[in-house]
Image 1 (cartoon, helix red, strand yellow):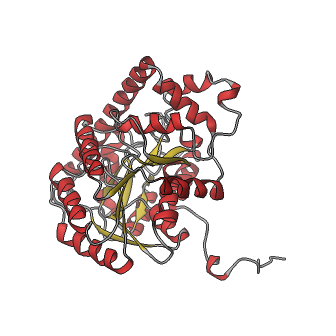
Image 2: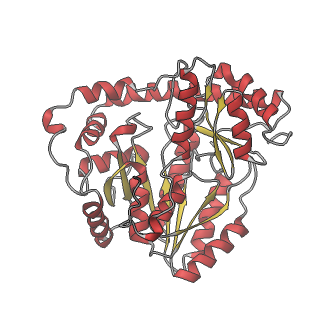
Length: 412
């Protein structure tokens, strides 16, 4: 006899418990297991051309060398300070402090803590559209509304008026503003803000800071896999200068999931490098204790070992350069193949994904599955993982998009 769990509170009923990304990946794997020829562009992890998960050799070898005392003991509740500094310095090498920060279970844990401590239930969070799907889940779980402003079109100017109007509306309504900005290497578009767009957005926040407290939280995940590392460095330096001004609280969600291919280790951090207010640290540390207590020590130990060895850093940089080149070739092949089919090309600056427009993404995804092509449909379009799409599969993929009704013909 099937029982209904009466103990579950009313507003927690009605969920299906499924995640669209993992659901689509499972469907692709099930189809492939039958012997069918499948293109699986759903996964959010780096795969080689044989479809096997890439595990960076430098990191795996370092992990194997850890001693029991680098794995077994509890880590400090707020995280190992050496780890937090090393992870922060991967992004801003000149900093001598991570400011106020704590270790978190991946970047997702960092995002969750930011909502718990910087917004009240019923408040609104601002981010760009399109966005990484779990942003909506994180907002829901923390009883926060998710509001979006448009991400710039390829080679287009940011709609500063739209951003400013919405940001000011939220700020005046609730007395504070939190903006999650996934830049550079935006998920799911694979693009980065131009210097002009970045400066315009920062100036908008600067102008609004007199109205009330503003937090700009930079969501970093894919910076090691960019087409142009110089552009990434320029962006990070711009954000550092902005953070040091102090008009806006600038923080970052950091992760070693993609950077170290340690997805399952759940190593991350929430840091505010230009903040000196210990009240923020105390609040974040309390949230750690009341949510997951502390994070795993082993990934912190790996980070510390890498940070202490210039040889390991050089080896890791070489691996990142190799896989960045692979991703660049895949994205370039996909762009060329889409254009060859008379469809809109897709520019790519870095990361694991690109986004393809579709009038009805879920219907197009269903038709693509009949062709053995699997993507992740979203309300904004089709998320395509170039992290798993082989270069040689780009023509077949583009032909399937054309057949099943992808983007409107043209050039993006």
